[in-house]
Length: 189
Image 1 (cartoon, rainbow, N blue to C red):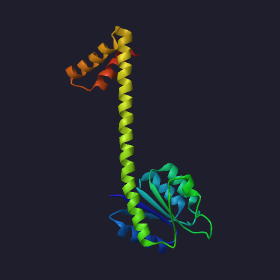
Image 2 (image 1 turned 90 degrees about the horizontal axis):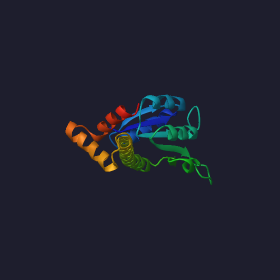
Image 3 (image 1 turned 90 degrees about the vertical axis):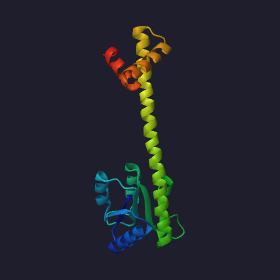
Image 4 (image 1 turned 45 degrees about the vertical axis):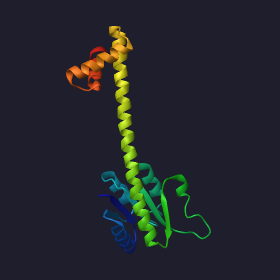
C-alpha cells in the first residue's frame, strides 16, 4: 500500500487533506504538524508522497520541501498561497516539486495525488532496474579482473581464461561470479 505523509500545522486543513487523500485512493496516511516532526519521521519511514500545506508553525514550507527533495525519493506536493502578480514560488525551478495554489481545487489535488503515485511507481521501477544494471556491471568487472589475473599468472589467452571460468562454473554448478571470486582469492593476496 502506498504511503502518504501530510505536513500541515492547521488541524482543520489537515483533516480536509486526509479526507481528500482517502477519496483519491486506498493510501496509508500519516500526518505531522511541523517541519521538525517531518524530518524526524522520514528517518524511520519511507513515504511515496509527501504533501506540505504551507505555512507551517516552524517555517513557510519551502525549506522543508528542498530538504525532502534532497534527502528522500518521495514525490512532493507543496500547497501554498498565490502571491498576486508573482510566481507562487521559485522552488519548482530548483527541484522536482509539484506546486498547488490555494484555495484548493479538490479534483485537481486528487488527480495530482494519483498522477504522483503513477509516476512514483515508474520511477521506482527505473531505480530498481538501475540498481540491477549497476550490480551486473560490477559482476562483469570482477569476472574480467579474474580473466586478466588468469592471463597474467597462468599465461592463458583471453579466450582461454573466458572458457576456463565458464567451464568451472558449469562443472561446479556455481555462477561465474563465484568462480571469479575464487580465482581472485587465490591469486590476489
